[in-house]
Image (cartoon, protein in one colour):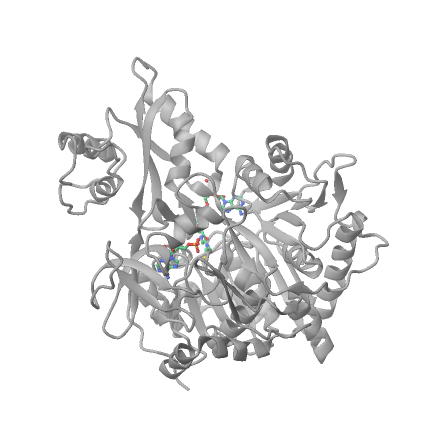
Length: 630
Ligand code: COA
Ligand code: AMP
């Protein structure tokens, strides 16, 4: 069957479609019901089943006689380390780690925060939680202690599993002091911490609270896989919203198993045993779905890559890894390809490697610009698939499903909706618009298995953020259009979220940090277009009356402040002092207009602007930073 037939099969009977997909999973108790409508726009998948994620991702492959297959390849050009872990080794390691966590009191439903870099132990920690039915929440290493503290207070973990350090090119990221200060800042205190001591830095442990990863596993009884309900939360993953408080996206166990397993074959076109590589980080949703769970559930070999697209050691790193480990499908962010292309525009590094194993490449996380896609197509000679998804959905909303059929590529479009997603473009009144017309992208409820059922501790916020604007739909927060052939294009966010190097960040969150500076009376942060990272944040500061301090001291202080409060990942390096901010007569800051000025794009003078002259002042300020061309 081709894509259209499969999509129609899903449309004709969505529940039967997913019940059929559910056959790919080993259930303790198979589901009788696919979808449960719990009322008021909330839905759950396979709620009456019982199942264990770790069993499906690890043990079942050992039972099926594939224990010697490599499950995880660790390749770290930063530390010059390579290591392979077979499925049977992974099973044993995870069972022991889970046993040690259980011995310290971690049980089904308890939350565990994981704060680790790209090392296999991060996946082992996730799987050990899954084995016990504990709910993990992985926090990205590029966040500052304050962000970790916010997540500790929201998830209230019984335990935190961390590494002593992370490795960035030319810099050791001292995780342990960040962990210590986060616990100090947080109101909630975990019962205990487990620290994986890396060779590159041995951290000081706190007697009675911190345990050494190896020591605490000594002599424990390995844990079996604990069956959980289909609607048991597998994890919480925090992502940026409009305000500084991150949203705790919940993923239910059964839906994730079914959807990810389906996607590995149908979207990523791999068979069990193939090597699948997502060059992302376990701290992001791509890392959850396609470094850890998806490939392992499907019996693939996954790669944990601790490096960067360039500089570790050069722009040929990706191609070296693909050749050396025989990668079939490769997934990265457009920004990573832009970084490689900038250093190797003619693709010379690519020709040094035999990439005959590579069948296809996938890009996501931000808009894939046509130049980057064309460069990749020309130099790699394989299909390059742009696909669109979000932390909330956990897997692709739109893609070119190569495992079903290779559809024609349209540059600038992540192709067509996947089964499970009824995507529509709506106008401000919530009415569908004709093909080719720009509007808000919404998905008709219910969302498919594997997507978020609600937000952790925040059902009202879930409704307000996603369900209220367009009743009966999930609001994606993206704007775009659908053409006559059903191809979707993603044009912009409709909220204050920006996308910096494939990382999702809240300008509202940065504004909260700037506003906390004692000299700042008012501020705005916008995302300006950047050739490498897609977008970069820029801050505008209005100072308190009478503040006579040197402006450059203040801008340096706010830059430092964002790094300290949010983290280096915010890439907040530029701010400028202005007299006033452009606003509507009702006082709303005209951030969109400021972005257009910065990018040198034509714009219509907002009819409700309070004082148009302010825009000239903004332009002049932006020009001092090298933006806003005439
Ligand atoms: N731990 C600690 N710090 C981190 C980090 C981590 N895991 N990841 C990034 N940082 C830091 C970086 O060291 C950098 O710090 P600096 O300001 O001291 O230089 C800062 O956060 C910004 O990082 P980044 O945006 O990654 O920029 P970069 O200049 O280091 O690298 C790219 C640029 C394009 C090579 C890089 O952004 C990249 O590989 N992007 C791909 C992202 C991706 O795969 N996203 C997955 C989403 S699908
Ligand atoms: P995240 O939750 O971090 O994965 O970010 C999700 C957001 O990234 C989406 O809502 C989009 O704004 C953007 N995004 C992800 N993939 C794409 C894509 N293929 N094209 C355009 N934007 C994308």
